[in-house]
Length: 528
Image 1 (cartoon, rainbow, N blue to C red):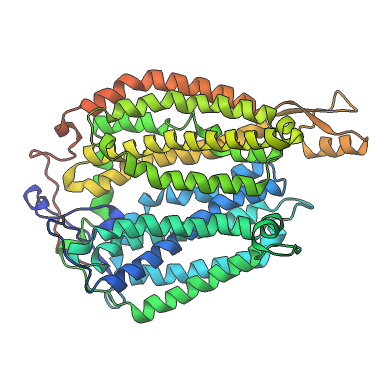
Image 2: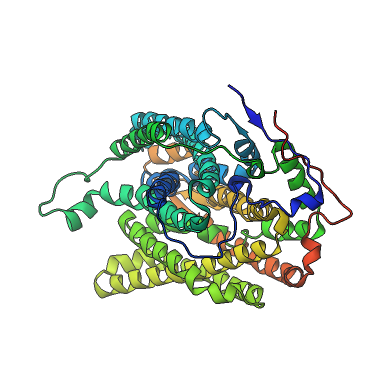
């Protein structure tokens, strides 16, 4: 069995003849200039859509677990620990060159990775199904550590699958139909995320099922979390067998082999040394600091205030629909020279949503107790606030993606863009974990029967309860964190406004990683 590793040296003159795309998309993708039909690719589109659905399911579960943990009264410290499990999608660029360049010709460049990944994903989900009820038990000591470890492994595998499927999409379809791969990507991942998030939260809910799906009330939901995880574990294992048995793969050409492992890592380092990239990295590595609390903690705070899990999920579905509309509505804006002005105009409105959520949260217990038309008005306002917040958030996201696609060096566009997107992803991962951890740190409580007991550790909490008291909140960490993050967000906007405009107006040559005096040598035909 021969294992191929692409370590290549190429001159600058050769670079222009090669279509270089993202590390995870290094198969040849040429620009479409003529419309053709789908003959010969319809079945491949179905296969690709199915693979992207499988890619989205773990993402949906990762969004659902924080709500499940909150419903089981896990602390924000536990939530912060679990949030680490979502980091692999942020840092997948670190191992993407390995996945893209190491393969076994007799098995297939993509199948060599995808089949084992699906088998391992299925196995991990089956293991998770066996222990999930114990890990989510709200009695005794919390078991968030084993849940986090297992889900960290699952997300590492899912991120690897992301790299493989994105790369395979370009060679699976005929060249005149390659543009359909982006449709499969967006639709498949969204549907998979929906299956992992909304389906499991709603169909396991006794209240939702009795109200909307049953003629007569019964105990329990239609599905259980254990059974649903087991089902998807079997699906991944069957998918691995089907891919191995029924899906053939063409051998990559010399042109499709890309830069190779060593040269890809060298390229990433050279891109990071560009002055413009350094400034952009500094801006967007800190870009989530003003929004992290609202983006991460708000759902759980409203659940704690009395909003049901079902209502949070229904609002989440409405927000999901917004994500489908915004990119289409923003097409003209992203092509405008003033797109970055729109980006910065969204920042104050997004920061103001922190105040809006804070006011709604403060009055939530009172408004829910009143009921009737007041409660209906409350849920209308809550849904409206969530939707408008998501609109501003997604507008900024779409503009940023458009910006990095425009400034990326066309010779290495995909690798370049992946790196620039990583800055924002790293900021999101770090601030998400940090904001969850800080809520508990900034929350101060006091025992109702002993003013000297501040319930700072579990032993003091038990002592308070033993004395017949309860730990009453003096300062809610969420409110304190909103104030701090809003101030930091305003300072961030003030500091980055001029540099970001300068980057937007910067000469195109300032973003090129290699010029005529700086030649990188790669031999595309070298194999080991």
